Image (cartoon, rainbow, N blue to C red; front, side, top):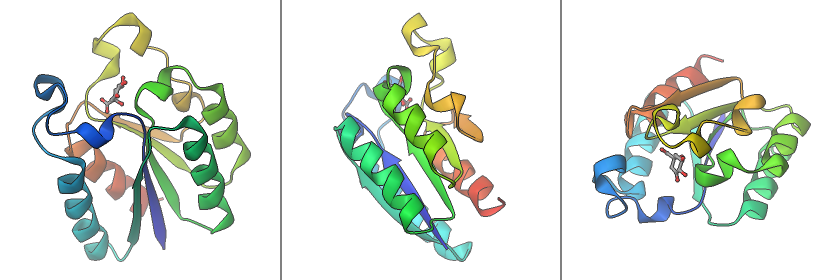
Length: 142
Ligand code: DQA
């Protein structure tokens, strides 16, 4: 079974981007830990990052077309703005787990609304990179 792990804008800069909020691990660090964890769980991970909203929509549809088991989605800032992502999540049968490194509910007001969260089956946030690892465990249990 394959779990898609889709990362949105500016997450390619993890490690140097606002480390006081997002920590010092890079996205590549998270990917390699997640790939190892997936092997232990008998899963494979398809891990991607884009700065483009449309690419995230295309990848959600691709995950559905390819019969993925689940999707971990850190849509980053598009979480709080994108009706297109909400519609895509509603349009596909694959369960989506929302993931955030930080806890957006304790940050600026504009981060309190999540369009992704209106359609996701679960959410793991505020644990740093561990948000991804906990989310993968939950995906494995779906
Ligand atoms: C984020 C939280 C979002 O509010 C922010 O726009 C991000 C990262 C997180 O992982 O904590 O880019 O999704």
